[in-house]
Every structure is written in C-alpha cells, then in structure tokens.
Amino acid sequence: MSFWESLRVAFSALLANKLRSLLTMLGVIIGVGSVIIMVAIVQGARQQIVQDFKGDGADVLFAVYAPKRGEQRTGGSFEGLTQRDAEAIFQRVPELDSIAPELETSLKAIRGKREFQANAIGVTDTYTDVTNLDVVRGRFVTGEDNNIWAKVCIIGDKVRTELFGSEDALGKTLVVQLGANRTPLTVVGILRHKERSGFGSNPDEQILLPLTTLQKRLSGTETLSQVSARADGLNVEGAADAVFAVLKSRHPDHAKDFIVDTQEGLLQRLDSVLIIFQLILGGVGGLSLLVGGIGIMNIMLVSVTERTREIGIRKAIGAKRQDILIQFVTESMVVSGLGGLLGCAFGYGVSKAISSLAGDKLPTFVPLWAAVMGFTFAVAVGMFFGIYPAVRASRLDPIDALRYE
Image (cartoon, rainbow, N blue to C red; front, top):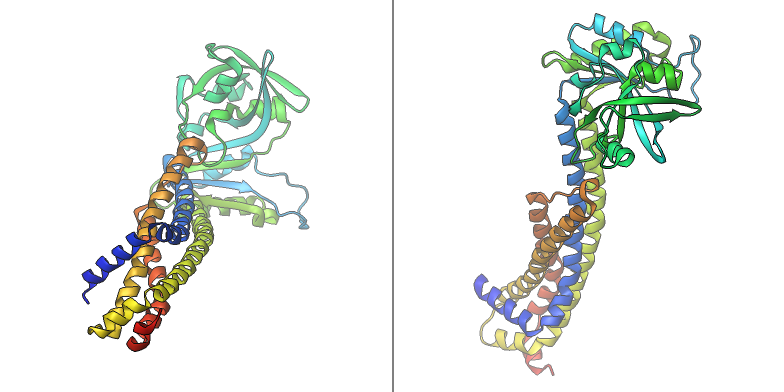
C-alpha cells in the first residue's frame, strides 16, 4: 500500500467517526495551543524589552550601588553614589560622551482634590542624552534649574491626565509630597505618550524634576539611585570597566557592592532568564501534549479491535505486515497532525485576544518557529504513540482475524 493510499484510508476512518476523532484531537489541540500561548507571552515580553533597550542604544552603560544585606563592611559609613562620583567618572573616563546622574523615588502628586502616586526622577540637563525620552511640549530641565533648585517639573502623559484632565497643564502648578515635605512645582514640559509601558517604570507615570530640587527640597539626601552614561565609539565594555575602576579607587572598601553594566550585557542576561522561563512554560504545555498522545494510543487500540476483520481481509488478499503497520501509524499521525494544526490556530487566536484585551501591559508575539515546532512535535507524538497499536495490528493472524466477531 502506498503512502497516499494510507492517507486516503486514514481520512476515511476519521470521517467515519467524526466525534471520536475530534475528542481524540482535543488533547493535542490543547497541548499545542498551550505551548503557542506560553511562547507568545514570553516572546512578546522579550520583544518589548529589546525595543526599549534599543531605543536608548547599545552604547549606554550604568552604575549603581547595591550593597548586599547582612554583610559587615569596613571603612566607615557609606550611603551610595553622589554627584562627586559622577563628576569624577566623567573626568577620568575619556570614552564617555555624556553622563547623567539621577535619583528615583515615589511620591504623591496633588492638584486640588486630585492625587496621583507618581514615580519621581531627579535629573540633570544631560538626562536626555542617555535616554529616548521626548518632550512633546514645553522644555526640559536646564543646568540653571539645578543651580537654583528650581521648582519646576516635566510630567508624563498619565500624570497630566490624572491631575489636569482636559485642562492645559503647561505652566500650571502641582504639589508634590514626599514624607512630611511638600513642594509646589510648575509644569514646564510634557512628555510624549508612550505606546508601551516599557522595561522598568512607565514614562507616562513619571515626574521629572531637577536633581537638586529633589535632593534639597524633598528627599534630604545627597545620594543617587544610579549614574547612566553614553560611551563614545564601540568599546562600551571597556568604558564600563574604566567606570568600575574609578569607583573602586574612590571607595575601595565598598568596591564589591558597585554594579557597572551595559545595556547590551543586561539584555543578554535578561534574555537568558526569559529562555529558561520559556522552556519551563513550554514544558508545562508539552505535558498536555503527551496526555493527548496517550489518548491517541488508546483510541488507536480501540480502532484495531474494531477493525480486526478488516485487517484479516486485507492480509488475506495480500497485504503485508508493513502495509498494515504503515496504515495505522499514518492514521495516528493524521489525527495528531490535524490536532497540531488546530492547536496552532487556537494558540494564535488566544494570543491575539490576550494582546487585544491586555493592551500594552501584556503584548504577545507568535514566532513562525513556535508554530512549526508545535506542529512537528504533535506529529512526532502521534507517530510515537501510534507505533504500538500499529505493531499489534500488523501481527494479527489473518485466520484468527477473519473469525473475529
């Protein structure tokens, strides 16, 4: 019997038992669909992270002070990076084009009876050199603003909507509160609305203000959350090593608590984590696919029992053992293959629905390799679990098969 004849017989058997065939495929459909959905969620998150990182550029590096809890330290008290550290880095690392110290905290923004918990970032005029933020109206923080601790701010689109509604926010005043400290700020700029929330805090929910204003008027601290910089040329890793050397020479007792990394390096580590996460989630979906394979084997064994006389007749008129073997393995692969195709369609549809309902918070992306992998794995599962029923059918004695009632 040729392969195409086996396919024809397989489809005839499926059409003869439509409901049973559909229920048999159900496990494969759910398994493949689950794998597609899991991959789509992880790949969507990865694409968003990559897009946001590329927006800032691969030549951006950052330095933070992240002490490990519970460890004993020598050399007296040390709270973290300061503006003096940032100045020393810029002076002693010639590979850097620009440097942007920043202090990040959460505070309450108030406008009349309206309140919004915003993410506040104290910045200098160089902050836009290392980020892809865009002021759609007004202006950004200037050097003079930092010199005089100016009471000005630039607000994100959501902050504007929550506090000012349809009112024009430019030139208006809002009050920010951090602990017991309250300071009125004049809105001098509005950030462009971001289509995606991005990696880290959402720019739509940010309030940017002069670094010295946040330090002197609100937080009461001289420390920085991090120092970001943009390197000149392609030797970003070399620039990062030079930055770490500067910090180590200035604070030798706390050198092991500094983290200096690049956007590219951080992206690679995040990518490794996402791959592991994807494998775990894909494994969970794969278990459903294996359960579906067991269901296929069960139904194929039932089919062999039901078609014992048919097998006897085929053997009596000259069918060989390999013909019967190929026939039943083909039927099993057809069931699983159709289930794999339906599972791909199901997974793609659910992924698109998730992206539409969740919007920017949970983007999804279904790569072609995920659909190919799901379909191939489904066919392989059908072949694997169809071998035993096929072997059992091929070994039937034609005389006993013809006598079977």
